Each structure stands twice: as structure tokens, then as C-alpha cells.
Image (cartoon, rainbow, N blue to C red; front, side, top):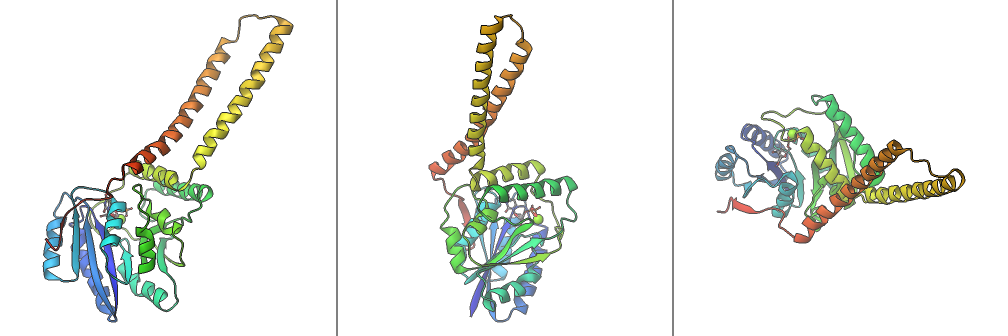
Length: 310
Ligand code: UDP
Ligand code: MG
């Protein structure tokens, strides 16, 4: 009998958890031919999430949980879930029911009957999201697909079902700066995409502010593309060239017309422009350097404080 592990990252989800549990057990009952395991990751919640998980795991032997010592972020939670999973297939799912558990039977069929290694989901609408957020999200997907070789699908959710083989491949990527959307694409394997309309979260609030999303998108770019570094060098070359032409021009002009002292405003403009470009490029290099710095420390991706076995 096949076993599916459901990995659920939870951060302050006390309101959503009971609803999620009800929904997922309903789906589990429909899928009679498979065994289930639910792994909840408590990502340093400040509300009652941990208590609910303790109760659930006492009531239902299929429920397991891993509780972090603090908030490590959703990426770390996904990693911990995959690492602790024992199923032949593993699904990653949000606790807020934005990833409809009802799609699971269809996803499972696609792997077992159609031979895919993974079934992923993407939302085709962004209903219920601020327009400005949608606009920048679209822009980000266009950009990252142009500049990186990881295939990152617009509107892709982290919600997907994978074979054990693919899970092992993902776990073998030990990087500290984890950008799951890129990692899923990077490891390859045959993926089937299921599209669905955006669902709003059932309870509680989103944990992503615009600023957090912006920083996350930079993380994604730095993790999966080195093009910004190339752009920095090309800008440097262009500016050197311009400077060279200007030097020639000034030398020749001085030789012919002498040296009337004028033109300091243009000089100031040039200094500002060039130092701006320099700082910008140093910033790009700094982004990569800081990520490299963190990687070389080899810090653990997460720290566990408690599990259902304690
Ligand atoms: N989440 C988490 N750690 C965090 C932030 C979020 O584990 O630091 C979980 C959260 O509990 C939820 C999922 O990640 O199950 C998606 O978060 P959210 O719904 O806030 O994001 P959105 O759907 O708005 O993009
Ligand atoms: Mg959500």
C-alpha cells in the first residue's frame, strides 16, 4: 500500500488548522487505497498552533509535527517536512486551504497512472490580491525566466505532489538560501501542471508584506542567476570606454583651443552619475557576497525544539 506524506508549514495558523485538518482528512478518506501521514511544521508560531498540533497528534496517529525553536521561514519548514517525511509520495501544502486538498486524488492519479514524477499547481488568476502586488509578481516571473535557467512558472504555488526520488533530489540540495520555486524546477523530472483559480485564505492573515515579497524576489534572482554580476561588469566596461573617449576629446580640445576653466556643472553631474553606477554595481556584488558568506558558515537550515515523539 502506498503512503503519501503531507507536509504543512504553519506559522500562526491557529484559526486555519482545524479547518485544514477537517478538509484533509475528508480527502484522505476518499482515497482508500493510500495510507497517509500528516507532517505539520510549526515555524515558531506565537499563537496556539503548537498546542493544537499536540492535541491533534494525540487524537490521530497519522498526525506528526516538528516544532522549530523560532521562526525560520517557510522554505526551512518545507525542507524540514521533506526531511522528516517517510511516504512514497510527498505533497507540500499550505495550512490556509489556498492549496485545495481536493486536487490531491487527481494529482496522485497523474503520478501513478500517467507516470509523472511530480504534479505541480499554478493559479491562473490572482483574484483577491492587491493589483500592484500582481503587477510586480508578473514582472518578477518574466525577469527571472529570462535571466536564469531554472524553469519558474508564473503563478506556480509550492503545492505539489512528488515521488520519493524527487524528494531525495531536493534534499540533496543543501543550500542555506532556499528558493523552492527555483529548486523544484532545477532538479528537473517530469512535471505535470494543474491550473486552478486562486482561492483566498480561509482564516488568519497572510504573512507576506510587499517588502518581504520584494526581498524574497531578490533572493530568488541571486540564488538562480548570476546575470546581475555580468551586467555590473558590462556597465564598468561601457563607462571605461566613455571615459577614454572623453579624455581624448579633452586633450585634443586643450591642444587646439587652450584651457578656459569652465564646465564644472557637467563635471559634477558626471561624478554623481559614475559614482552612482559604481555604488549600484558594488551593491550587486555585495548581494552575492552576503549570500556566499552565509553559505560558507554552513549553519543548519532549521533547529527543532519538539516533535510528536517528545
Ligand atoms: N508560513 C511559514 N513560515 C513563515 C511564513 C509562512 O511556515 O514564516 C506558512 C504559512 O503558515 C502558510 C504558508 O506558509 O501555511 C503560506 O503562507 P501565507 O498564506 O501567509 O502566504 P500567501 O499564501 O499569502 O503567499
Ligand atoms: Mg496563503
